[in-house]
Structure formats: C-alpha cells, structure tokens
Image 1 (cartoon, helix red, strand yellow):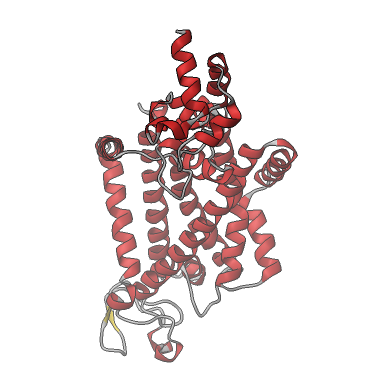
Image 2: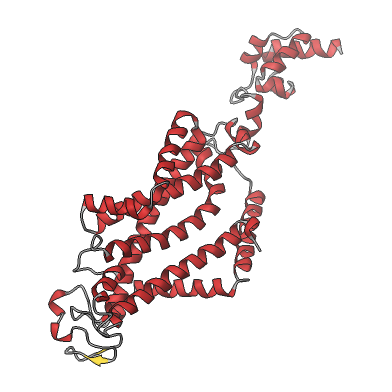
Length: 384
C-alpha cells in the first residue's frame, strides 16, 4: 500500500516522465482537481500545487460537491437542469396522460360538457360577427330611425328580416348582440389576461422573496380584496372617463388582487417543499426557480380563477355600461343594449332588453359552470 502510494505520488510529481499516460493513471478525483482528493493524496507524498499544474488540459476543477453532478450533464452554454432523451419522453408521456385523465374526469359531468360547448359556440359567434351579422350596428350612417323598435320577424327598410327585432336606434338586434358579445369578450379576456400576468407576478415574487416586500405586497392585496370590485371599478371609470382602454384599466385594477392572492397561497406552500430547496442549491438563478418550479405548480388554481374572473369581468363591464359609465353609446355592448331597452319593458317592447339579457346570462353561467368543473378536475380534494 505504501509502495503504491509512493508510485502514484512520483507520477503525480513528475508527469512528463510518464508521457500522456500520466494523467490517465491518476485517480479520477486527482485528475478533476478536487481539493478533498488532494488532501487525501498527501498520504502518498503528493504536492497539491504540483497536482494542479499536472492535470491534463481541458480537465477543469470540480465545483462544490453538491453541484458537481448537476453541472456534468448540462448542455454547453447553460446552467439549467437537462433531461436526457428517455427522461424527456417519459415526462411528455406523463403530461399527455395527465391531460387525457383530466378530460375523462371533465366529461363525467354532462352539464359541464354542455357548458363548454356553449362557451365554444359563443366564442365562435363573437369571432365571426363581422361576417355573419346582417348589419354593422356601429355604422351610424347605415341606421334608419324608421326601423326603430321593430318587433322580431319584421322586414326593415334594408330589405332583410330583423329576426330579433331592432332597438330604439334602428339597429338590428341580432347584429348588435353579436357585436356587443364580441366587444364584451374582447375587453374581458384582455383585462383578465393582463390581471393574470400582473397578479401572478406579484404573488410569486411575494412568496419567493418574502420579508418586508412580501408582507407589504400582500397587505395591499388584502386591502383591495376588502373592497367590492364594482365599487373600485366605478371610482376608476369615473376618474378615467369612458372608452375601451379606460374600461380595461379599471377591470385590471379591480381583478389583479384575486390572482395575486391565489398565486401567493399556492407558491408559499410550494416554497417550503424540499425540491425547491434543492433547486435553490443549484446554479439556477432565482428567476429560473420562479418560472420553472414555482409557476407550473401554481397554474391549476390560477386556471380556475381566470375562468371565474373572466365571467366576473363580463358582468362588471355590463354593469358599468348599464349605468352609463362603460362604453360610449356609439359602440354598445350587452350592458348598454339592456339599458337602452329598459325603459320600454312596460310598453310591451320587451325584446330590446330581454334578448341581450338572456345572452349575457347564458354567457356568464356557461363560463362559471366550466370553471366549477375545472375546479373538480384540477383539485382532487374537491371531487365528489
């Protein structure tokens, strides 16, 4: 044992005497330059300074022992954890299987399936409104006041049948509903998306960094959640004025707190788990830990919240427009259409308000039913 240690130390001290084989015959820990291995090699009379000069070219020093195994399998030019081909394929199969299982669970509720079909049909009608609507209700030059308040099924001056009648401005009600539905969905989905991104960023940052920043951010969120969303939206719209950008800003400000609180709760639970601590001990940056570990595990509750909040945004927009604080009268949405015909309900011209009201009710109800079933699917604790 002593002779073998002396021979190894001799090769380590004079690598040029042994040619290229010198670096190969050294122990792997010595060739890698690990400090603990060098300390052990001192028993064989090896000098660690000569060892660092003797290691082969291109053989870098090993990093911290906890990081060595992670860096060895990473692709060049990055520090992310890398999955080999079989592991990546297994992960893709796992995700595909989870999606298929979620769809099977969702289909167990016939009501939820019908609600999903209704939502898809409503979205399709809204997107195709410019091509399937008989009239452009936003074109003021094409309106005829002689066609005002025509009952359903009457033929107007334009030569086509108004299947749902007309409103008090002579608009074809079917066209006005399709365009109003398109506008309401555009505003609600856009505002919900911005609120989702903003609220998720605040919630994840507060959960990850904690400290005074997390406490302050969550106190502001809790303060906003204590106020009714409609009250906050009313104040903001009254301050900002009418228009699509102003209405979207009011909806974002009224809704982002729900996403922030949901993301904070889910991320705080994940932040205390062992795999997050393991990820923090790797060379991954804090931003990558947020995006690759915390964010994916907060998506299931956020998906449920975003469906509910889109329905809430549609209701808020309709309420503001009904009160005259939403969109201008030249671009009526569902809420403004209901408001325009409200005064004619007692005179027998029910269609002006009833048909837009039914459309609004069906849209909000269908989206809420889809969100309720998604909660059952994404959270097994809520399954019946």
